[in-house]
Image (cartoon, rainbow, N blue to C red; front, side):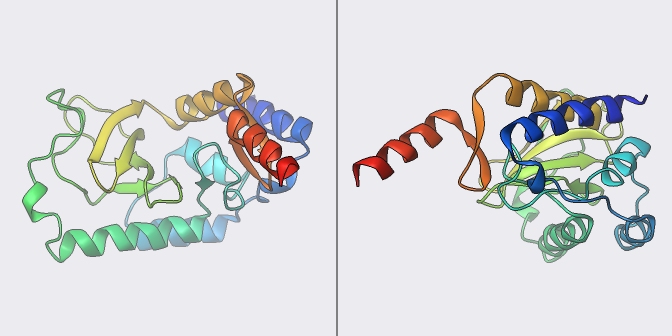
Length: 197
């Protein structure tokens, strides 16, 4: 059993126990993954391809960090960032160093070869770095905040990223609530407020 399969099985078990399995999308198909690679000009790491072939993202708010992107949304969001890069929107931030001197990433606010992975409700999210700096690794996961810029790497691989998601889910700090995955305390407060109203 691959590492991706092993961690996904545990994530799926958590979703099943929460009654939230419907938030995990069915698998992507090979043709759409290949088409996305052509459009993006990259080859997805084997582990990411395997993950997509298990679940093509999640429903909106169906992921710990908001929404795990479907293949089509990965392409759409990358195009949006690339358009901003190409029209000069990030020219004043070309020296931004996401890895703070560690040379794990290329400098810049956005780099062609960073591929969106998930997104929260404010256009922030994790990205897969396909063009790392000299001390980074291909496939490392960065955090992209549209206000403060990229930071990381947060994880060295998609397996590490998924394991971190699983660890958070299993911590008891998150629950299925209001057709999404939310902080347990926020969900409890929402429930109490509904009772009081």
